[in-house]
View 1: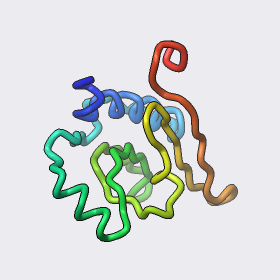
View 2: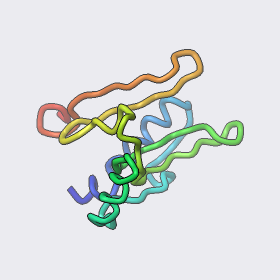
View 3: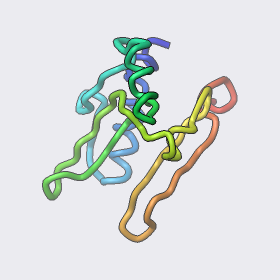
Length: 116
């Protein structure tokens, strides 16, 4: 659970995905990582008042030409965004591409069977 809460599990997965997507060598050590353990109930209530939820996001993107930035951190997500509806043992991958536009893959990501 600590690896999940602190974002380390997401960082390892983000490094693998970024390496595949961008064809580069990315390790978990390359990923800026902030977990959710420092969030307070006030943070969650404040986000809700603004019409947002707080989600732990893993983001990989190409920046400045060929550079790749990979990070994991809590972020405010608008309540009407598809990622806001991802709960419990479900995970989602939201992808934006020039040709395909916005795509979201969604399914169980925790538990014995989904992670086997």
